[in-house]
Image (cartoon, rainbow, N blue to C red):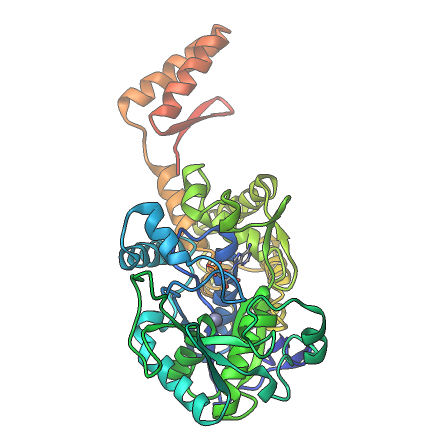
Length: 472
Ligand code: AMP
Ligand code: ZN
């Protein structure tokens, strides 16, 4: 099936052609590990997971790399401001190394809860200082660097004629208007490759280098680690949309003089998850995490379902109303799958029908990741009266691989919960509630329902009596 993707570099949806047949190399910029990852970060990791699953369903092998930024960089793109890792360490009274370990673990844990497949490689910036220094040395040899005494080694962006091409930026315009915060830089767009440690402060993270003790500039790690794990040229580089104009532009500037252009064949950027008041961000202090959703009683799959209803190039507003709607939609799907499992029908999988629906489901997602259209096709499949249960269930397995919605697992759990008989004390409470209702003593009936609820069971009124169902 022809795969199509929007390439930020050409500003067009393009037919995808991999460097190696049936194999794709993908790099996705990962998080800075100084705090929990919020649902916005998760949207970005989810999108990169969906892209990978789409390739797998199309028969590709995938080498997927997502880095962890554990070097404390300065927070602004201008190489000034606070160090996030040191800030996290001070907040929690831990060393920066412990902060990094803690939040890498929590990030991977949240990804697991959302059923985001673990990337093939999750390299850490601090494990690749040598590779980063080697890149600077290569750029130095080619004449792209200069030193600002007591500050660092900088990249001279005026040396690269097409600097800014990814974001469609015109360098002379950029140089004109803006205020240069660092007066010693030759050009406003120049950026640090290596920062010297300040003379008066001992940093927790610093390394020796040919230029002096210090730490690498932020953009460098992604150039170094992507090329290490994917080769000098690779298929797809992705990340949040805010990376286009600075981070990814600078990655290109560092890499193309060394390996030749084009370094990366497709640039894919993910739009943000928004709150009504603006971007969901750690700096705003109020954010939601996957574990926070579980604490509120949501299945993480409801959030995954919600993300599937949007398109990766469009911002999505998060609200609990939309999450509730997604949770209901998801539950409905699980119910239908559970009902399919219960049907006594021995007819085998109809291969022609399977192939027809397989393609109906895979086509939209392969066309620039139109996940909402794929989700609609899944709904049509589950609704259709013309497909036998074995064929449908076989397709549900395929859908679980493609969308990661864990439908089979949740349907099995639902059936197990429904077939379990309640313990005697819960049964007694339910009998007493039925009596109270018969006597029109609704206050007592409500009290008893609350007790049943607290014991982990739900009492449902059905014609001629009640049914006890274990809560999921
Ligand atoms: P950070 O730790 O802030 O560097 O973010 C890690 C990744 O999550 C980056 O690739 C960001 O682009 C992405 N990200 C941050 N906030 C959001 C958001 N509200 N929606 C989608 N992606 C986000
Ligand atoms: Zn990056």
